[in-house]
Length: 211
Image 1 (cartoon, rainbow, N blue to C red):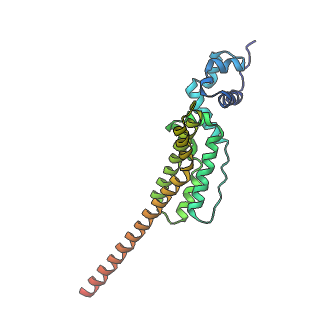
Image 2: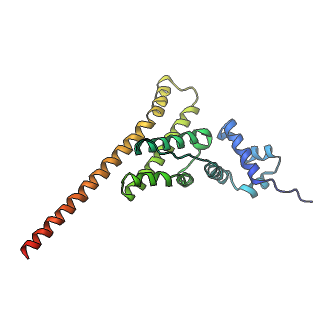
Image 3: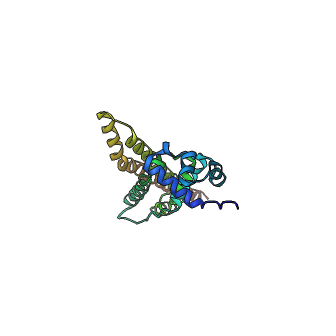
C-alpha cells in the first residue's frame, strides 16, 4: 500500500520553523525531507523546488497576517503606523524576510487598500495616492531586509553596528520624507487646478464681454 502524502501545510510549518531556528542555510530539500521523514522526491512532488517553497512560505505568511488598520489624528500618523505594523510583521520572521524578492511584494500589496483609501480621503489624487502607497511598501520592505541582514552579519565592527542601528532608527524619518513630498505635490497640483479654473473663468468673462 502506498504511503499517504504528508499534508502540505505541515511541510510549510516545519520549513518555517527550520528557517526561524537555523536560518536560510538550513532550509535545504534534503534537510527538510529528513525532518519530515519523507523522500526528497515526495517533497518535490508536493511543494516543488526550494525556490518555489520559499515563495509559497512568503505568500502563506502574509495571507495569515492581520495588520490592524487604525485611523490616527492625521493622515501622516496613520500612514506611519501602517508602515510600522508592516515593518514589525517583516521582523517577525527575519530569515524569511531576508529571502524576499521583488515578486513577493504582491503578497504585501493585499494590505494596501485601506491605506490607499485613507490617502484618497485626505484629498490626494488617486494616481499620486497609489504611487505614494507603493513607495511606502517598497521602502518598508527594503528597510526591513537591510535591517535583518545587518542582524545576521557575523562580528559586526563598531562602525558597522552603529550604521545598522542608524538605519533602523532612520526608518520613521524616511517614511515622513515620502509623506511630506506627497503632501507638497498634492498641494501644488491643487493650486495648479485652481489657477487653471480661474484662468478659464477670466477668459469666459472676456469672451462674454467681447460678444
